[in-house]
Structure formats: structure tokens, C-alpha cells
Image (cartoon, rainbow, N blue to C red; front, side, top):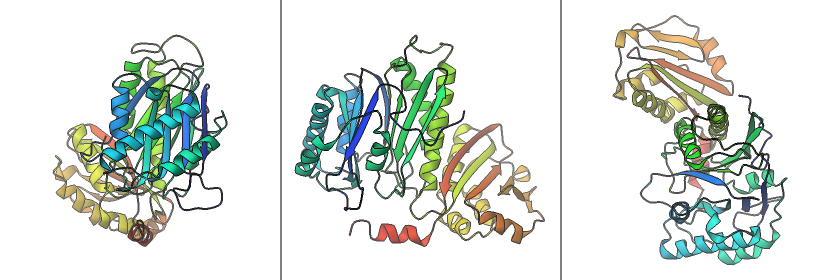
Length: 397
């Protein structure tokens, strides 16, 4: 399905969003750091959270709220993650949600909260409370929401896709500390389709697993990782549940949008100059295919070679060899930017200068065939540049 990158979280009917500058992030012209997204009507809701055992206050708060009832809105602050902040962090998170719910005119327990930024710092509640009245919630507020949730991101990441009479919109943030295991990664999706909660939850988990859980910038997961989808049914029609004629179309559209957003995260990785797509085929099990994708995407040696446009396919072979996945050595094949560089246990004859030239583009592909089965997986990552080190050497100071 075709994703419109100009779409956003308020492209579906019945959603409002807005943002303001509270002074949490470093000041800059047009900077925003506090945002609200809300549905004008009740929603089905599904969410997936970090598996980190040290998780942010917002993760605990949202899990507790969603265990009781679906939500219809979320408030997000950028600059401070409110993670590893103890009882005060929990109290601050609940208060931020309460303030946002009052601004949006919905019950407290229907407003979720997400925080992203530096770990171990308390939320500046006075600044956030003072900025809340400045948030104007409108159907055109999606782009402002996407800008406000950014931290080291260099640009907003949004999109929308249509299926039948319905629209799914989305926005996400993430540039460093990206290796979701459900970086700092937050993703918010909306749809005006009437989707039953169990169907929404199952489809969303599968879509997240095939998209955000197969993207990596640096191999580090976050205590704040959260992906949420709201379905408000504002476009009308019969409730979509498992077995409904539109259920498969909904899931296909949802997956397409999640993949688009995941790729945008990888493309905007801290210091990145290239988007790298990793495809593994011929795996014995789905787990083997996914494991090798994630190992390839986090190999600093391989990421560095890709940054330098060095067609050193031995970096790929080394990862395959240490991965522990099942393979038939005589059947293993490696392609780099569409060029076969290794097969049948030996290197092929290729033009290294031409391949290096192909690797200088903004999109690089790595494909591995294991010859051990029929399972496959595709994931996304980026190259490793000196700029990544510079950003993270100075991130806190």
C-alpha cells in the first residue's frame, strides 16, 4: 500500500493535536517540547511497551491505565525522560496526564503520558503546567505534534495510508538509543476505522514486530519505548473484528505505515548518512532470520564499512558465522547493493570500484541467503559515522 509521507496523526477524522514550548528542550526558533493528541470520541486502544526491566514512569502509568479501560489521548514531553526517578517521577507523570486531560476536556484515566529525553532527571512540572494552556488542539495540529516529540531527531517523522473508506495516520520519534525490544522510540498511530479492541491489539503487535522491532540505530534499547494506536470509528461503518472482510486490509495498511515510520527512524539515525536494509532469506526458523537481521544491523564493523563505502563483505560473513543460526555453508550467498559478492563457499568476481560507487548512495542493501529453510525477515539500520560519537559524547553535558 502507498504511504503518504505528508500525512500525520490528525489525518484520520476525529483527532485533534497541538503543541507548545515549555522550555524543557534547549531554546531554538520554532521549538516545541510539549504536545497533546486526543480523539473527539472514545477509542479502542492498543499499546506495546519496552521490555527493559528499568522502565520510565510513563510506561508504568500507561500500563496501569490501559489495564482498566481504553484511552483516547496522550500527552508527550521531550527533553526529560522521567526514567529512574522513583515515586516522585510517578507522581509527576500522573499530574502531567491530569493537566493534559483537563486541557483536552476528557477524564484523567483516558489520557496517557509519554516522556522522552535525558534519563534520571525530574520533570520541570512548573514549566510544563505553565505551558499547557498554550496548546491549541485542532485537526491541523498533527505536524506540530510530530515536531514537539523530537529530541535528537533532525526532522519530524510522519505518514498516513488509506484502506477502503478509512485512514491510518502516524508520527514517531527516535534517532539514537534505537533497538526496540517490545530507541528512545515513541510511535503514535490513529485511525478513524471502527476496530474492535482485541483485533486492534493483535494486528498492532504483529505490525510492531515486523517494523519497529526490526529497526536499529545503535543496539541500545530505552526505558521509554512505547507504541500506541487509537481507533475512534469516526468514519463510520461496521465494527472490524477478526474475520471481517476489511480486517486483512486494515492489517496490511497498518503494517505498511509502521514499516514506513521504522525506516524513517533508521534513515534519521544519529549521525547517519545512509539507510541500510537487511534481508535474510533461507533461514530455518523465523527466529533465526530475525536474529541475523538484528546482529547485522548492530555490527559496528559493518556499519563503519558501509559509512566508508568499503565493499568489505567479510564483515557480513563474520556476523553470519558468529550468529549461531542454522545454515548450509555451501548454499550461503551474500549480496551487497544488489551485487553477488559471495556464494558456494567462495568470493565471486565483481568490480570493487563499481560496488563502492553504489555504496556511496543514501540507500544500501545487504542480503543474505542461508540455504537452511524457507523463513525470511527484513529490517533496517544505518551507517556509523564520527558524528554519532560526537552527538553522544556531548548529549548530557
